[in-house]
Amino acid sequence: MISIKSSIAAACLILVFTPTSYGQEHPIGTNIEALLKLARERNPELASMKYEADAASERVVPAGSLPDPKFRTEWRDITRMGEQSPTLAPNRVGSTRYLLMQDVPWFGKRELKREAAEAASDAAKVRTASTWVDLASKIKIVYAQLYYLDQSERLTQEILDLMVRLEKVAQVRYASGLAAQQDVIRSQVEQTSIRSELIGIEAERRQLQARMNALTGRQADEPLAKPTQIRVLPTQAVVNFSALEQRAKLNNPLLRVEEAQIKAAEKSRDLAYRNRYPDFTLGASPIQYGNTVREWELMVEINIPLQQSARRSQERESEAMLSASRSRRELVSNQILADLYESIAGFDSERQSLTLTTENLLPQSELTFRSALAGYESGKVDFATLLDAQRQIRQAKLNQVKAGINAQMRLAEIERIVGEEL
Image (cartoon, rainbow, N blue to C red; front, side):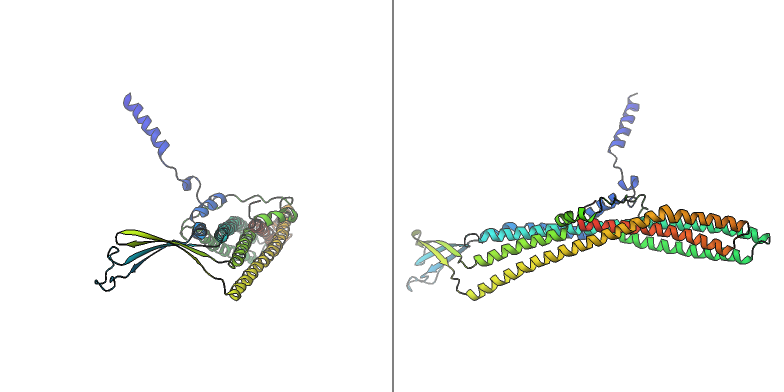
């Protein structure tokens, strides 16, 4: 009995503590969330930007710190008026002077340097966020392309199966003397063309999978599962320019980078004006005679800011750099809002096209095809008319797929501009 209980307990422990593979339960590629999580952890470009942001944050403390102090030693009268051979022993020379000096910037300069470094650090952090937003947008677009590529493959395969059935119908009619052999040949040619498209779809899938693997930091040839779901398109009330304009101004990473750079330029300008005032060097100096320190000296050194033309030039430079940063922010703001308006207009157009195709064009094309198929079977319609009807329904489904992927790509672009998911 004891052994049975022990075996059961051991089995339970194995089930509890054996690690489960996320990839086995949810293969990478089936949903967008897993891909985004993987990219955040493994994308080398994002990792590089994070390291640069960390490096920039470490510059803040040194920027606001005092310079390292300096120490000087002077050996005076090392021959004792010629009475001895030269020596550097402090107790045997005439006197030894020790000088400890500390450079001290003018009041407020250290704070300005520290604040400028903090602004640069903030800009580096925002650039990291901008890199992530761009990366996430690319992943969403490639994921949508993969999803709709699978839909296109399914559609193409359905059309191929349909053409196989049409070939059988044509063969039956040809055997009965009701149709020409050309109908059978045309159906076979159409099948060959469709199979060629399937080969192209597979090649495009491999390219997109390699691109997705690169974005998520995986090997180019690592397997990637087929997407199983696509994001639901938001309503018109959500994707509205007036509703998203303010969010873009507040959250767009590029605008936030420009704001941080303006702040850094302002601090650099203030520091350029503060350089009109001198810096100090303070020092203390004990003097040793023999084995005893008998004298103390204090020292104050001030640099004289006489090169005023150079300083005025530096001040004008800092003002110009600040004006350039402000103009660049205005340029980026205008471009962002223009891109947002364009993307929203494109999104609305693709969404309307998707709705129109799904609710009107596709049902009409299916009805036309069924009517043409019935007419061909009864001998009232020729095979060319049937092929035209088949191509219409095929084109309608392709338009549906195209509108869907374009809407998803527009949505990803809007989220990139806004700086957050809708």
